[in-house]
Image 1 (tube, rainbow, N blue to C red):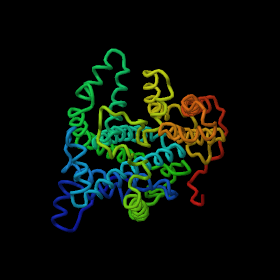
Image 2: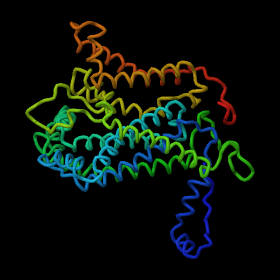
Image 3: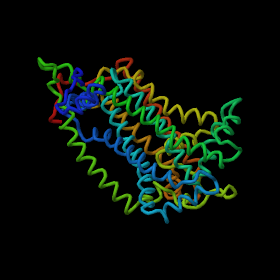
Image 4: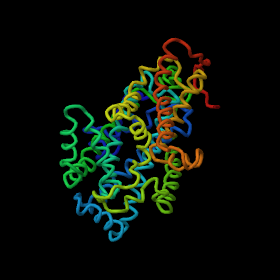
Length: 431
């Protein structure tokens, strides 16, 4: 909860002169020391700040990588090799950037799950949720284009497969595909466009959306694990009784959580930068060859759940619609959920089971999209098993579970089937 704007008047003459014309200190105070956050935040609330930390890392490392990268089919792969082998500390900057991309999605997915668990998408935070999902969409586009730029085998064929999906759109599909790639196949024009979008356009949009996301959050106040509005219980001065200033209390905690996160990230960067082929596939260390198709074309792990939906739907246009519908459904969540209770702590058993199944479906769809099932299906059903048929059936089942969550949630809450627990009048810090 942000208190009323208070103009700060510094004693230092120069600062006072600047503040009178550009109230930066007043603005910072309104969103830090005078912004009251619930006092019962738990560890899941660290991931919002960690997302901001990773964003800064991606921007800074991306600037240095762009200095040496050549966005051309003939020079892209060689320039990445040059960065890794010849540029001083280039290997570290490249791995910080590539590992940072995966860590970004780890943090974002946990951040989104926390919002689902504690009802942070419900009134009055619908706009905060929508802005967050727009950040997620832009981040996916940014990550995809960045994945194409190194111009390895998986970069080339991934670009060809994903961009060709637009060809499924009736009437304009083929023209749109050629317009995006700039040619009939991914090449110089594709790399030039993706480089401009990845380095300039999308980061600007991303920073703008992040700023709006934070401002919208501070306007309505942060949610908490109890789902109780702290603005409903205030002192005579208007200070929330269950709130504490974000600075210095949570800034100190954020510094600690950021330190732990950076330490864990450093272990990955220095000892397992490819993370066993999950963060960086072995095929992408081979220069792109349009005449040699990889044995298995698969996306990076953070796109795998949506790619699985595309794979298990036999019709191309329907598969594209289902893949994008999986994200669109999240935008509708504030209006699909008619429940009066926010937090999973006090919601009905049906919602808790449905949320758990939703999370499991997302993970298992990711396994299907990443091709993990091709190894365990023969072990379970024998070497003669029809891997494709079993994989499709398995993926379709969990795809229905994924979409079933939204249908169930709407029916469950609209027709009054949910039996909730009593919600406390104020936050409970003991839980």
